[in-house]
Length: 544
Image (cartoon, rainbow, N blue to C red; front, side, top):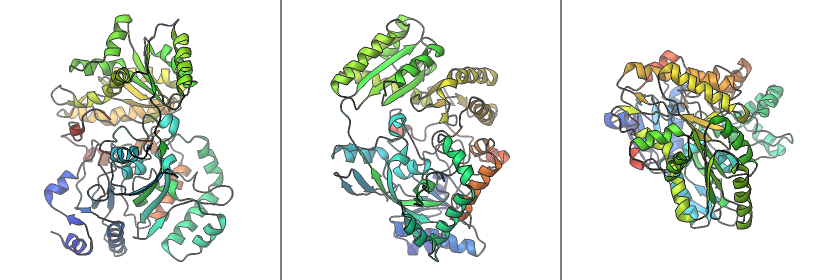
């Protein structure tokens, strides 16, 4: 055991270890990258995180950098949950629900709880948080906040940022702050503090003032999740809330140690439907029509994903019935959750009437058993991640791209061309109501040629997204893996702005170093895993 881990063990309630096996276990996350930490800390409280950060800060002041990497469930697919210094694992102990305010629809909780566990607990109060990610069974609330995660309901209900009420954050020097909307007078008081918090308020306010026109341009398109969200920090009335900076920051500015989340009343039994389209052109037109009915869920799933899943023995009754009617290019799955029974009947009637003269095969159901059968369609994309083919897997590195609806058909054609050029299939799926899409390349990690395709495909994918008016980071974060591609299309003044935010909140450069940074691509290649098989979270199955 190192002197550092011995020192921390004497001062923390939780545990710190530099055991080789533990370090190896935490050297990977949900991404295709690997990086072994010096040690792993398992804090039991905010105080433990504070003491760990304070120790790392003091070391940095003496010229010895020991970076801190916050980690929840380790599901991050961009390499943001791995690091060289101390992994701060909040999932082991910090998963307590402190209180639920049913009247105000608020819940105070620690960041290590899984999203599924939190929503299961809230069900007892008739509540839930609709911005849950697809990995809710094993991803943590803290990780979701760090990535500003979204899911199948986010087209209607927004990403996780819309549901954060207040954060408790441990800063890079070990101080603790509470976020919240502060009046202009209170902001002035905070700026006058001769503390690190005072420095942060002064520094961030100066950045906002000096980049006022630039922030106006960034506010026009809020679908780019790269960098830091300065746009929503300060309002025209002079009030400020630092929470938007930490949401989506992937632990590079501070460590979230406690959260107050907003919740919503559980919806009624939904109207559920599925439509099979014969081609992407008719599907694009169909999506435009369906948006007008304000669905809570609108998921697109390429037919190739069903074919791959069915080749492994999975069955999808709707898809088989659609094939009996003719060719299928893709399926759109729908839910309408907050309408009255009468309104849902009207919606079903109007949708059926619109598509009655067109080729698509359509089913709309309110019966619970039939709804359960239709919901199985949502599992097809996840099934391909656990291929029965030897050494074949579909790592999730081409995911979360925003593509404007009017450009999606052309984008899909470009993806088909990329697949042909690179010799891989790239079937698409996505949250069509928020225009966020994923591709699933099937690769053999035993082959160096397939491993190298990752960077070629990332380059092709990012160019296709940008050329069609989209953003590479429309969902989650850029981490290590995607940062060079996301920042490659940013203007220099935007990159300087983000660097300024990082410098204000992490002047010693110890918070999740190498993440949300334009990393050299040769460095990325050196971190590439040779043993990725997609099984890291297989214990939870393919369902969300």
